[in-house]
Image (cartoon, rainbow, N blue to C red; front, top):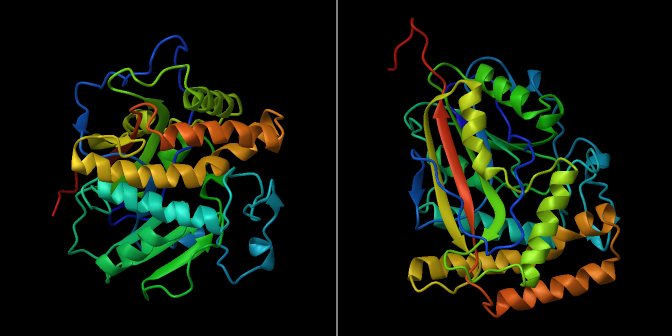
Length: 351
């Protein structure tokens, strides 16, 4: 999420390829930067949004296609038995069918719970009228919740698929477009976000680190889940689509020139194995969304990129599913939140 009293919105940054994890040891948490704020009582997901509020219309920055504009937007293709977005086909490798819609709503509940039942962490000034853009809005649940929370703000949800509900708060609308089409590349994307915000405006990014690990060394390369996770990550890297954007968010924000940067990392157990009730609750939410999402995460990557048959892919996923259900290891992945402020100019002071 990005917000402020800005001009026009930003987007979720495409990721560059992260270094690969050695395949000879149990996976353990990566070392944290000295200034990383870590909340061990919270976990997963990627969500971004942007807010703006000057007279410059967002329509001047992105071409918008609403759910009712063109039949081509909702003429969804099917592949491997799943439905995918029609708008700019292939730009996103996840399906958009009912099964995935349900998973996205569960993932939203997971992230909200993990971050302290909060929709955002940036210090937004709630008494000011805002324009807020939710980039990659998915089912639109975050934008709708924000519309209820900020009744005087204009909330715009942007996505490649028109899967959002028709009945929404009066201050919420959805547009179908690929924001990254005009702002290709992380450096250009971040610069445009920076330029689009008014001085003092806030930007917030939320995304995951898809590399699984364990604190106690119980998650090892002999596990089928380890093999699947590594193959998925390595293959995504090979085609320029990292599954590990979360740890890179702070660096992108710093390079763009933002200040007052806060970085928080939230642990997300892969199942209800934790002793702490808070983690156990989050782990169960995560297990449900993982089991729902295994096919969605894998089919395009393993079948279309690696050339596996769907049958072979499903056999592998059955083994992964069994390990997750049986708590075969105490797995975790991290959800990262980074928010930052555009500096005030010398002529301007914070109100």
